[in-house]
Image (cartoon, rainbow, N blue to C red):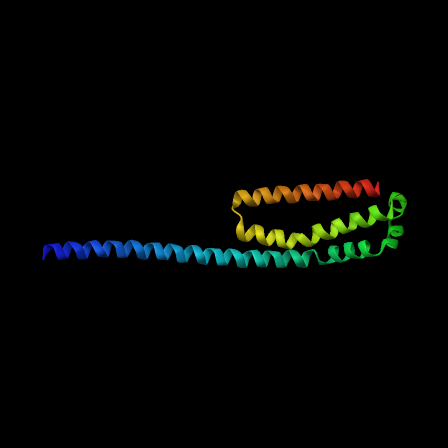
Length: 135
């Protein structure tokens, strides 16, 4: 009889541990789904914020005659260079909502810092390219 009691206690111990593991797995899955929703929400907000610059960059890229609007050195650059610059701007601007959403949903704090540094480099690159074309 005592062996039955000890065996029963032994099974209860495993059941409690197993239940605890299932709870932690359910919590981590719930946390991942919340991170995905926060990522989608942040991507949507960024998409709204970039709508106007994206449409302007698209207009400049698809209408090379808009090069005359800028005057100065931009008027003297090649039409290919002008279009290439604006198509790069369109790609970089359009990728921002996806990068922000993915970063929030999937990356750790260290990964977010690295992604932020990459985005900062892209912004600096855009500014440098813009300065080369404009001034």
